[in-house]
Image 1 (spheres, one colour):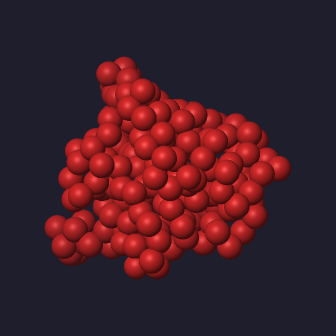
Image 2 (cartoon, rainbow, N blue to C red; image 1 turned 90 degrees about the horizontal axis):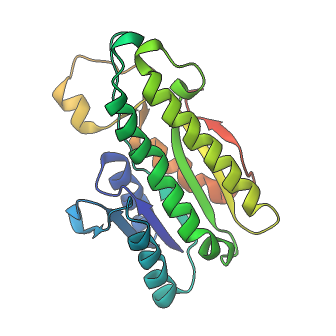
Length: 212
């Protein structure tokens, strides 16, 4: 399969790249930083994203999976302390990049026999706390966009789904704070396994809660 991982240099992206590479798939890692051998593409630049899609079409002819793992968090102690600058940042990271990749890659996913798209959302989208106003709103918007994308894919071989976590944890976090338990957190390797499992289901437009 041809798998594109957006946000591939982050811990979740690295876990997804490892898993799909180990399965023998062709993995195209994309990250603004260009770190760890990823393609340096600014996903806020729509023309650059469209160019990436065109290049992948020319080389591979299709995309079988697009995993959007571009993330970020900003918060505050109280609602009144929410900074609208944080909202602007989160809107770009969590919503605008998502809009660009889905609009650019929709045709390629539809041309795959079993194209799969996924984002990772958070419980904060369902029940945001006052300090998570900007973050919860951005995640809710990303979910709404993904559900609209799923509707666009209905009736094709492709699907779009949402994986919901409380938060993510990786070995670097555990090493930095060995006494912390991280209750309810989802390990990035477990997230990667859940993403791979999307090819075992025909579900489309669903929220899959990984905290249960």
